[in-house]
Amino acid sequence: MQQHQQSELESAVLGGGCFWCLEAVFERLRGVASVESGYTGGPRPNPSYEEVCTGSTGHAEVVLLRFDPAVISYRDLLEIFFTIHDPTTLNRQGNDVGTQYRSVIYYQSPEQEATAREVFAQMGSVWDGPIVTELSPPQPYFRAEEYHQHYFEQHPLQSYCAFVVAPKVAKLRSLYAARLK
Image 1 (cartoon, rainbow, N blue to C red):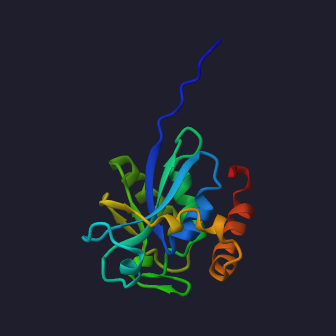
Image 2: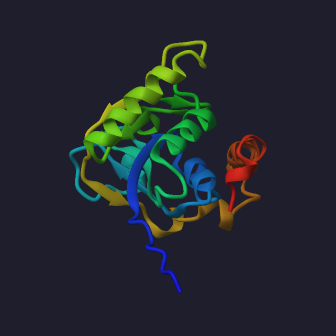
């Protein structure tokens, strides 16, 4: 019997508005082993949700993805990321306004940085306005409070989830059905 070697998981850290939206989308993709909501990008260690919401911590709401690159590539993750949020609005996604909702990619390696730059160039022709997504080196990451983890799954009828998160999940289903778990 031939053994198949399991690929080593890689990490990706992405911010594109509220982390509930990103988490709900990415946890539905084949090859994504885990998605965790958290904060990164600011100097304050272990910030609380309430502190991050003030916009004064420098942190962004992000998701930490662990993915199998043999099943879904980093490039594919970034292309989906650029599809499910608006990378042309500075420090804003819909009614969520502030630096904590900025569009940002925290690359985890020189290879991820190079891939992100290639995807930026590719996406420049897709969007009407200039892409304002930040490209940043890794920063200390802090896991968000437990009640933020798998938020959409636990609260699908909550108004924000119903009106903001659910349409992003529906968009994912329509555009990337072949990639769903």
